[in-house]
Length: 123
Image 1 (cartoon, one colour):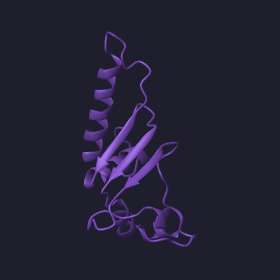
Image 2 (tube, rainbow, N blue to C red):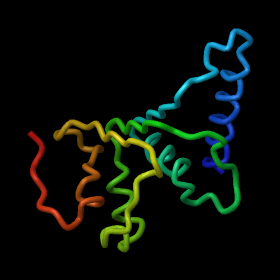
Image 3 (cartoon, rainbow, N blue to C red):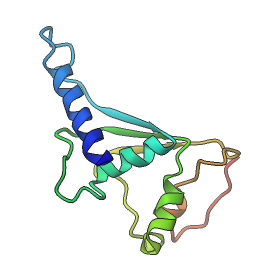
């Protein structure tokens, strides 16, 4: 249900912005930022994970920013197959995972996405 509520509110908000009578957002590009658990919910909305025929986004997203995201931990424990190179980032969206190496909640996405490459510790 959270997926449908969030996707519906995102669609409503963008519709409102596009309906601006002055046309200020007519050619706007969309970026989504999610912090902590919000980044996991945003990922689910962007990828359609768990949607089961519910609400989907009615627009394209150019950039997806994850701040202090536990997404990698959720993906790792949700389905062991994700660790076999089946983890995907949302469509044509540029994805930026911003974290501090000492944040106990944030995790790197690179080991899931680039599973066949050596990993370098963050500086």
